Length: 279
Image 1 (cartoon, helix red, strand yellow):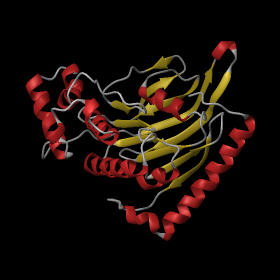
Image 2 (cartoon, one colour):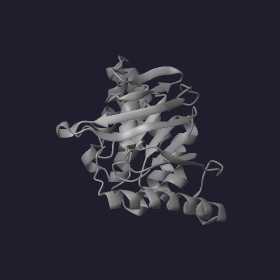
Image 3 (cartoon, one colour):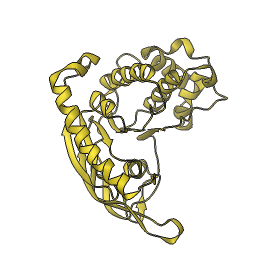
Image 4 (cartoon, one colour):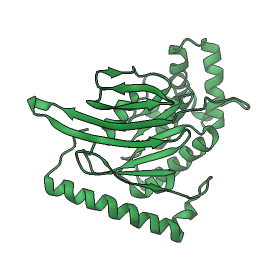
């Protein structure tokens, strides 16, 4: 991220009465039912809820990976998808997946330059921009390394850098830190927040980790068990930049209790109904 570089603004997402019906083996499964909420431009929105409640379904619809059955999703006032219409995935919506997606045969630098080169930027220009970005994020020393030589936390940092170099309007993260130990997760949390504070992209982040949701998010959207609707939305009013010290504050403990109570109730319903992971 070169000094003085201007990043694209925008990224407001409007989810309006979205419904998604899957049809595995000819049996209709209502995954999302008339789900609606708004995400402001530059907002860090975290979505939590029981497994299989439809969180990833919403993320995939925003990304352009599948259609919805009813309702509409808009990005900056433009229609992204509705029944029978889905905007193709593009560089304006970059996804960081749960299981990682770095090319193991490419170096860190080559992985980060991949997107700009596919978009038609000259290789020298892409390499220069990538090195600036890696330097800004403290990753320049590993530019020549391969993903297999890196820790899980370092690979995640590279994936976030690779997404941001494309200057997306929205960064979509699907439980990217799920398999990490607590210490590694804490370091990557700090990295993600530093990146967010610099570029102020809209973030749509899915997690099961309630403390992660509160530490990272500006807004926590709690979903019901399947079929997914919005149960409640909690505004996280801690100032930025954030410090781990906030976890010991009285306000943090109050919000944690609110989120835990809401999610626990839905998880108990899901368990009683024998829900399984769907999407």
